Length: 157
Image 1 (spheres, rainbow, N blue to C red):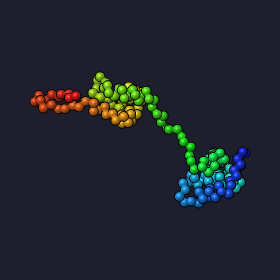
Image 2 (spheres, one colour; image 1 turned 60 degrees about the vertical axis):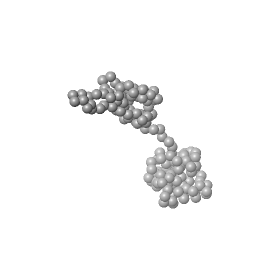
Image 3 (cartoon, one colour; image 1 turned 45 degrees about the vertical axis):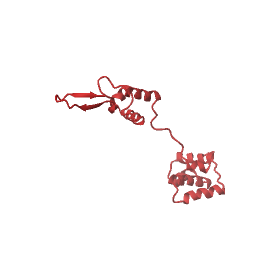
Image 4 (cartoon, rainbow, N blue to C red; image 1 turned 45 degrees about the horizontal axis):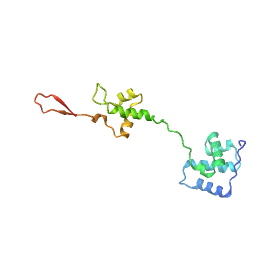
């Protein structure tokens, strides 16, 4: 067993941990965490624990330490992790919103790829900003076919 790990489980905690292991409705991650603590309290070493619960030594050490610091409550709760995608800076979002109402000089409205290239982000981020703010740049101007016998197209604003 690793030095510095001394888990003493009170009879009250042992009953709660064994209930978690026995309960068929307990999430499996809670079951193997509780088993790690119970087997550690029974004096099993790291290698024996790894074989018994089927986890690597870092996982065994992590949950032993978490139990020592936080008790049973620490076993039931996962730590939060940072988001995979960092949020866009506020200035970027505001720039996309401001540019959306000013179509480029060569087109009638912004497309997501054109806006993304101008601002320096990816098109899906532009679409997410537009959707989040209820913007529909393709509906800035409406075009209507004319009833004119010459067949000319007229821009209706």
